[in-house]
Each structure stands twice: as structure tokens, then as C-alpha cells.
Image (tube, rainbow, N blue to C red):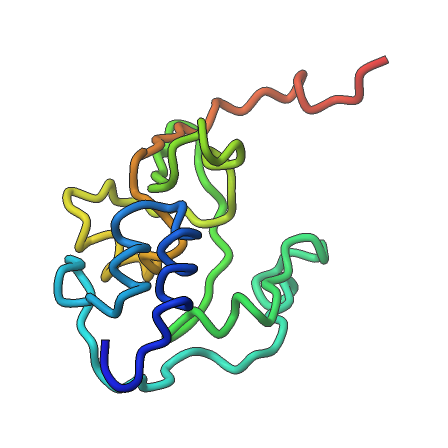
Length: 152
């Protein structure tokens, strides 16, 4: 770590680093040993921090709007894509024994990662968010019109 170091703060960060070794490396500023991370000056490249309405894509349900806090994470453009039956998506996340919501969430990719650098560099998952213990694969189920009807 550079500059004056508050050892208590470092110990506290390490103690609270419950996501694993990569979060610990972030706590001590050891980015050189995290695959996929390159320490450079930040260059803002995201979309403006404004809601992107689903109506921009022909879907008139506000539940599909992209929140402003998520819009800024898209570098070029955001698209609303309907997943087709049989299509596979992937999520890299924590062990569900320490994170009961690990299997769910809004961040998935179409390409299964082959190595850690692809997760960090390719999908912008910060090391302090995740311990990278599981890769979940989800297959979109077949269309089932009967299952979508209200139950009585």
C-alpha cells in the first residue's frame, strides 16, 4: 500500500473481507495478483446516468426499464433481449452456503467464462463483490402457456 497506512483500517478491511482472497488483495491494494485487473486511471465510458425505458425497445412495461444506476455500466448501448427457450446463460458468484442469493441476480452472460480474467475483465465483476466459487448455468425453459395462466 502506498502512502501513510492506517494499520487498524487495513486489519478491519481484511477481517471484513468475507468474499475471499481477491477481496483481501483489494483491501491491501494488491491488484497485480488479481487476474483481469489492470490498474489504470479511470476513464468514464458509460452511458449517462438516466433511466432507459423499456419503451425504447417496444416493450411498454415499466418493470423492464433499466435503472439509471445500471445504465452507467453499459459502455456503448443497452439492449433489451428476450431469451429464447433452450438458450443458456451463466453467472459467476459466491458459494450459496455463504450467500443464499448467489444463484439469483440480474447479472448473467451468454458466454461461460473459462478463467478468472474473463469474469473480472470481461464482465466487470469487481473482486470485492464476489469470491468466484461457483459458475451457474441456467437453461431457459420451454414455452408453457398453461403454466403462465393464473392458478385457481
